[in-house]
Image 1 (cartoon, rainbow, N blue to C red):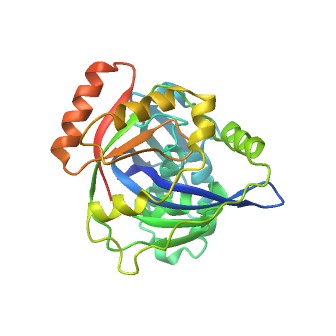
Image 2: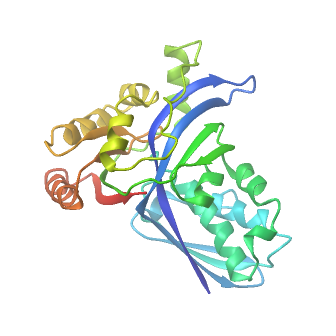
Length: 287
């Protein structure tokens, strides 16, 4: 048996820098991974099967076009089959890369199950990119700069652990309508990329926050227009005196707040959970 953790991927900032002729948007973003996520277990089998459990299981169907099923199909020539169990702990269509993380974990897990060294699979990155723009980053699951449609990846080291709180106001926000709204608002989509990153990485959480204040998420305003609940989540985070920065992740609806200490993040998360019983709120660490 093999087990893989599929951590939430959080976009600390996201700049839309252009759009290709085929419609794909070009992005420049800084992504990190949380210590909260889905869990996948794998057992050898003659054929592929998928069982889904967990608090967000009802939002996913174990269909052939599920990202986990597609990831397994990518490895069809290398692995004969597997019984896969997904414990779905992350909300769906939430801007934190849950599906991409699951796909990446499936690639890692199936290779581990059959004792195949990922370094020996020359086409692994190509398989990941074929599954989705975020899957190559999720294969690595560490602080990265992502450019283009997701194929240009560079490490950011060192990167300090960041105490944080993730907040989803209980609404699903599909990515397509958000980008469409952005295109309608800005027909000539294409802003500046990220500010220059420190050559030696970030020395502290305070340094990360200071740099992030000069960045943005270009999808935040369109998301709030479509789902005002995103704005309510950001307001709740920003209202806390210990929250150093509040922003939406990806295309939403999940937002995050950065804190100086885990105790401050834990205290805020517990209080917000009591106040907003229908929201998904979790204290975590980004790294």
